[in-house]
Each structure stands twice: as structure tokens, then as C-alpha cells.
Length: 208
Length: 208
DNA sequence: ACCTGAACACCGTTCAAGT
DNA sequence: ACCTGAACACCGTTCAAGT
Image (tube, rainbow over all chains, first blue to last red; front, side, top):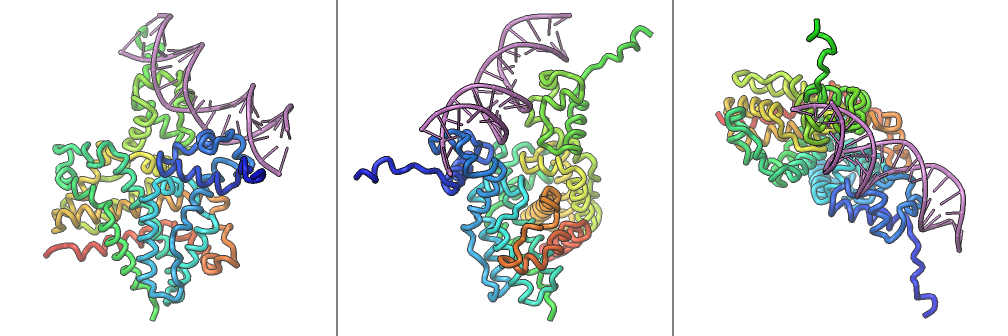
């Protein structure tokens, strides 16, 4: 009974990152401040510096932590299937955790989890007959599109009503007429279809 | 002579936005603070609020201002040529003005210039036989890729040495071997080639 | 009509001090 | 070894005051 009480409330990196992720998911990356994370953990802001080097380092850890949710690709699998699966999952992650999408563009991502995931994608491509340069180009193209698509959806969500209401019918008649389609272009189905096309487009690079 | 003297140093919105753009291009978007823009203009930070509604509004104006550099698309032109030209120019703009790229993802872009440009792209697509939904999808896909590619290059530039040095050879052998190619995937030539492919991929949507 | 200065409620981070 | 409180140099913005 004596050793169970008080629970030895020791802080560690994992708790700090989890708290930051919680706040980020709920209130956006801007809400992730050292003061607020400290408050969430019932601790002084300065206590966090015993476990993370800086605010920037905390954001990097937050990204790397959440990337763990992604399934690794099977390097021996069919490349089209693996790529579609991976980037669809990445897009799902980024739209489910907008703070991660925000963080990925504020900071270069070079954490261990990100690196391991990229390695798997590149591996399946080179094993499938892609030259090194084509594998790298294909990966980066898909990655760039996926981040862009997540950000586009995020910005739609942040927009006044998410429906592109600000478009002037006189000044921009076509954009005005297509405003509904422009909003829906961020939907899951459309993104998945675009990813499928991008993946298929890489087929021209496979050497026989 | 009497009315020429003292030059009636009146501040206006244009001067404020120009100063913000100057600071952003040189020192990044984070350096664009009301205090610093005020200092650049030799004026109190609070003077700016007579010409822009808020810091966020100033960033929106900064984006819209710099988008003016882009050439409008010719709605009667050949859609492949027009699209390639427009998105290549957009990518050039975003890499030349990193602050604009940063701003485009922090804020939804709905300014008048952005809207007019989008209208031109959508117009050339619908005139060329694209259904409304396909035109919107195609535009958004290209836009997302272009923003993503600009951010990727920006993050490479921000990286420790821009060469992906942090990749562990044991943990991620393929990524390590391809690190040179991964860095170069952000180069102009590679982005233009990817844009060309994306544009060509849309051809399947044209109804005859 | 436009500008200023002081003030408020925030930031990240340093540093000396506590246990 | 870990945590705290005060302090510093910043933010955006409000508000009363000046011209």
C-alpha cells in the first residue's frame, strides 16, 4: 500500500509528446505551446525541457510519433498495390491529424520512422525494376501530391465555410460555376483516384 | 515649392504589403511581424492597422500581391500548353518567394487575383471538352502537386545541409543509397517533367 | 484621418534556485 | 536528476491620447 500511493509522477518524453499530439489534434498546431503542454501535464513549462530539447524538437517528435500509425510497405509486394496503400494511408493520417500535416510543412521531416517508411517505398520500387533516379522521382512526386492534397483539404476546412463562398460570379464565372466541384476535389474518393492515376503513370518507368 | 516640400509621407496599403513581401522574401515568413514591418517603414507598429485589418489580412494581401506576377492563361489556347505554362510559372514563383509558399499553406487562398487565375485555368479546360467535375479535379490535382513540390524543395533548403544527411545506412539502406536522387527530385527539371506527365494524364478525361 | 505610447495577454527560452 | 519562478526579449492587438 505504501509504495502504490502517490504513483511516483515522473515525466518522460513519451508523455510530453502524447500531450502535444492530443492538444494538436484537438486545437491545431498553433495551440501546441510549451506553456499549454505543461498545463496539460500539470507541470511547469520549464519541466518539459528536461525531456525535449526545444519546441521545434517537440514538433519533430510529434510528427515521428504519429507516423508510427502507418503500416510499413512490403518490399516484396506488388508495387502498385503497395504504393496506393501507403499513400492512401498517409493521406488518411494527415487529414485525421491536421496538426501533423501543419508540422510536416513547417519542418523538414527526417525522423527515424519517416526514414524507415520512405526506405520501404523506395525498396519496393527498385526491386520492381525502377532505376534509382526514377524510384526517387516517383516517390517524391507521390509524396508531394499527398501532402499538397492534405493541405488543400485543411485549408478548405479552415476557410470561412469550406465552400469557397468568396468567388465572384462576374470576375470568375467558371470558378464560380465549379465551386462545388472544387470543394469536393478534396474528398477521399477524388484523392484516391488521383493517387491511382499517379501510380499508374509511373509504369512507363519500369525497365523490362 | 511650398507644396512639394516634406513629400507628404502618407502610408498606404501598397507600401505596407510591399514592405512585408520584402521582409518575407529575405528573412522568411516568420520575420514578417507587425513590429518589423513598421520598423521597415519607419513607423509605429500600430500605424499599420490604419491600412490592413490584421496580421492575417496582411499575409493574405501579400499572397495576392505576389500572384500578380503570374501570366494569365489564354482560355482559347491549347490546354496542355496553357496548363504546363501556368503551373511551371506557379512553381517558379513559389520557389523564388518561399514566404508566399509558406503563406499559402497557413491560410486558405481566396483573394481576387488567385480566383481570377484559377478561373482562367478552369475555363481553358472546360472549353477543351472537360466535364465540370474533371476540370475541377484536374486543376486541384495539379495545384496540390505544385504546392507540395514547392514545399518539399523549401524543406530541403531548410534542412541541415539540404542533402538528407540524417539517413541511417543500416536502418534505411535504399533511402541512403538514393539520397542524392531524393535531393535532386526537387530540382526544376524534375518538377517540370512531373507536371508534364500529370497534364498528359488528364487527356483521358477529354470527351470527344 | 492618421499616428503614437503604454498596456495586456501571450510566446520560447535562460538562469539561478530549490529538492 | 528533475522541477520551479522570475526574468528577458519577443509576439498581436486594444485603447486612450495626441495632431
